[in-house]
Length: 120
Image (tube, rainbow, N blue to C red):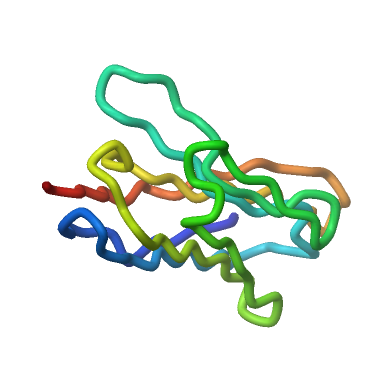
């Protein structure tokens, strides 16, 4: 079993900053990929930022230059620093982690979601 615990969401004024955290625990041999997605009301879930293929990062076009993804491998934790927030950044942010189990099988897990609300 793998658990993902997210923290750090909240309400912030436009131009402000928030930092999200997602800690993975449980039956983890290693972590293949970690990232953040978000879903705004009435819209599909979209990529915000992710680590892929080791230390390579990928960002959604709308957050480039404002958001930064980072991680602490020792703690199996991924972070999302969000600066210069805009009202259109409002949504539920989900942590996504691809875990390599002890059997070497890959499993994708989602966090519980963190509400981020940016007001004018």
